[in-house]
Length: 518
Image 1: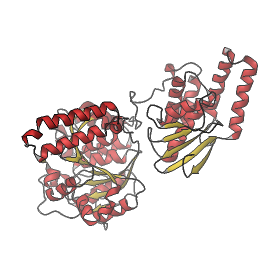
Image 2 (image 1 turned 90 degrees about the vertical axis):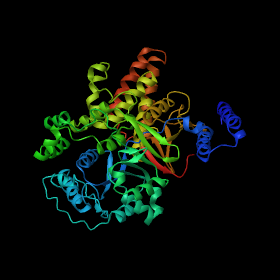
Image 3 (image 1 turned 45 degrees about the vertical axis):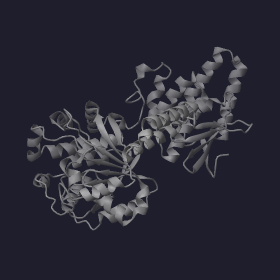
């Protein structure tokens, strides 16, 4: 622990002794909050060291009671290529589970998805909300919404978690009945749940339809150790699925726009749309998953597993939904840009001819990594571009976003091989500042690195024939111009652009699994 944190700890403990202990009047609740504060300070070095990496891809299981806002939320989720839906569970609520299964089945047909299992939960005694008849009359798709479901929701949830290769996010749009009954039936699979994202009107105090439908089971889940993020509309102005968003659906020709337009053009639904009836509710759960930066989150101090939004950026949410409908939403997580620039006029003249072909061949992520590497590196260099391609390849092998890999590089600290390190840092987010890139102690330097995620490590190195080509090009430049001549650097730039376009990251590297970093 750093000295400044120790100092804060001493100050706090001294404050506690002086203010409270002499009176012997410290309540249990106050002591609990003090203990939490001290614990946070004790571990502040770990907490403040770096931000948590943003996860680009999500594996989820949806639990829905099939209100019309559930339909919008499920549509947004099914439309996102970076989100894998493993199953859709039906809870009793706005519709009964069997009725909801039919709606979901017809929606899956609209998205041409036939491999997502649908499973029904149990009926809840006394649940029959006044808006159930309205939701019964809405067609979620053109096909039949009659669906016979043999799967049981709790069994389906248990099997999916048991067989999952990674932790799963539970997106809960209705009561928490199925999750609670899973906990009761088989708590051993709970560790496979990354977190629950639940829509409910309020968490502090606990109230709202999704809670009141099944208070007992909601309380059971909340008291568990599973992280649960509760998202609410908060009755904010302009937080509606309204005529202006519907107008976007009317103009756009995307599949998502067509599906939403077909639902909201139904006379019964359109009438309520014109009355500004439809709040953004379950839609917010999706936007919290894809764009958490739009939400202000707080933690309940006596329930540390429970988080809830205290505010959110309504305009940002509406713009993101609009982009999703229009097909212009980008799932990449930039720090400043919404999307990285590709307009030709923004780039130098010798870069412009390669923009379209480089993006078409190798994708947007590699384009972004190479551009940022070149700016960071200070010039266009071959090994820096190789490093960028290597880092993108590593992320693909592990299926992770930036800031999630630990890297040991063998490129040393002297150019030209050391230039590889800059490309790796930019493309993976493993940087000196984050403490996640390390120099190997081996004396021999080479364009190679070992990438590690959790308990798996992969060694990636530039193939011999490509390395020999680069070495020959560098020697040729030195022989012709010398290192200090601008002709040398022009040749290097020319070659770098050539390799940027011609070298395919799926072909230029030797890749092998290693048991540990060495």
